[in-house]
Image (cartoon, rainbow, N blue to C red; front, side, top):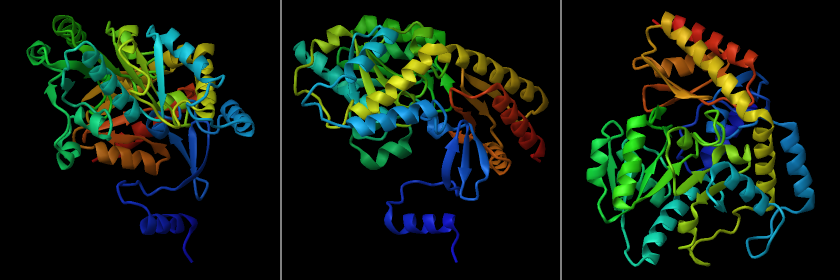
Length: 396
């Protein structure tokens, strides 16, 4: 007789589109920073749903709020007002300094909104600009607009032709001004490139972005989907680099597991957008907004300070490990977004840690990425470091 895990995998194999290369684990419940498989084995989760489970798993306050909202009212569509969307917008605009918000369902939808609003801005001014400048190593999503600004050719080529996008190396600040002509609507950047290998933009490149926007008039889109909303210990990492975005894309952490994305806009961009230019049936519904309010309140009530402390502890521990394990060639990131460059053993580290009960993931081929819940405890950080150390020590 098939086990529960085998039965679940068999149903998927028969009925689902096979676009995911799944890790052969089946999780049935979670608690805090832990996931539990069908045998109830615990795994310390330093992936957190790719940064989505920002408050950990089965968070009691989130569960109570979502259950209460489900009993009250889940969805009305954007044909009508409801009491929660404006409150989430108020909090996000206060955090960011960008005075307008638009809600959608995911990060990639937020990128689509940013690209559309940037195009609309220039159309309204009577000088349509068709081109976008993006960065090598970038990842902005898989819908056609977001995919157009994503660097990896393997993602892009099967779906070309895409939007007119020029890619610039984030290691060459001087190349940015040359790429930005009068036909460029926007420059789009991740303040920390997540899928590309957890690469923070340098101060020099951030200065070049600002200079290129000022010289060409191009709008600046900051993709804060992974690195924003407290992940690095700041509300938005672009601000720590001195960047002044005209548009910002949010997702992942905002709903703590409930799907929601958002675009934040500077007023001059918002003024160029008219009713009917963009929309969505589900965006900003009551259930998603209620979850977002729980998350934003948690950040306001000491969550950001906690990430700063936890991030410092994690970084100290990782740097200590690097002094003992030469396989670690570099440590990058900020707060609770960390990447270990392990050129010859990233797969073995992820698999070895998983066999010991720690979930990590590999990105950009050679990087072990860590995205624990923003609520992770000191003890859980220490446990993750212990397992990671054991894993590294076991490598040939």
